Length: 485
Image 1 (cartoon, rainbow, N blue to C red):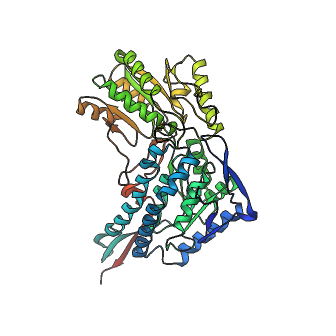
Image 2: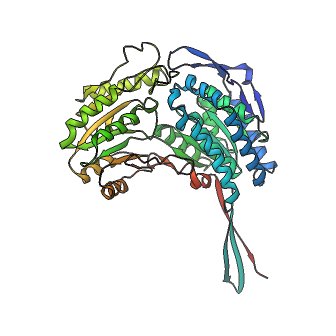
Image 3: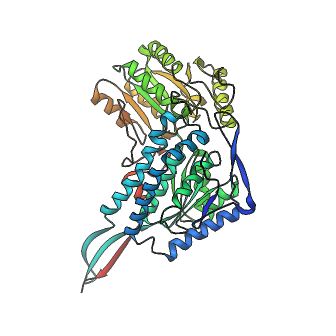
């Protein structure tokens, strides 16, 4: 398989200091795929220094036309290497090849072209007109400028999508970026690094490192030369990053956990609703922060929903991610498998009932596979209904009326996504608008896209990724005034 194992630092593909490496594991087999360069603290500091120098001493931050040219080159290079990236994603991430054309690969590549086009029409200045003060006339205006050096910390589940969602608007804004790829899927971001090296993006503007060291992650959040941290991952880690960044008052973007609710209204087509939810919970083996993991149905329709969900989940093809017929692959590693199973077993101990799933598929003894799982008799306040699991596990919770459904859905520290399905459009929209969450799908509507802002309420994060707000995250605003002669 064609892939890259080296780091990209200051415009060069290099091995880690001292030739350090760590293993990457195929989650579908549990076997070692190979090794990747394991960046040291010294490597990270070199990347930070290069990014700082590139921002402070070159014209990258001010040359909009050159940035647009480089982004066009990056888009063309990603298109050329699409199949190479697809193979690495399937092997390193365990994502089924059948779903890689969505948010794993092709759709994210569109982020690059979207921001390139935005550069040509974005308003970098705004005239505020004149004002009279102290016997003089003053002209005021605002100018938008790049934040500076950005540390972009990427998780394992959608490494290309999330890398591009952070890197591209940051580059469009004029920032320089150090990307820290996930240690569980290092080949993906390092192969991306080699693609970046094919463009005219100057040395230091983009560095891409992978590392198993906690010190490397820590320095990216504490080094005073870093102006902003953009992180996607768990809420627990996001809290620690926010605290660490506070010492130097860095700007932070955080896209964190979710425990999103799917509300099937009492007039919903339950067969359609359960099909949508079954696809959602098994998408990438449930390893997505915006996946709806709590399905809420009217008490009067509970039994039918249980039967239809069981049928749907038991019909999902689980197995080898290289097989085009597979719709759900493995969890990322043994640690995650144990976590998911631990939540299920604890829920059962607390009184929940497993309708289907809750174990390793008998036909898949190797790798980190877990059956699509449905739990009922779940207390809405229990851990299985409140905490992010990151696996193909859903809970089915009955409700009394619309107010009760909204209350249960909003009973969460998270607020990332949600879904409402119902025949009465206005009623479904009214419920959707009451959800304290950053994105909501109504009757299967697709909110994901390069132009669509994504982020959460409450402890699901701070800020928005993609769309125009995604560019604004990486900009500062300066107000300038001068007297009118």
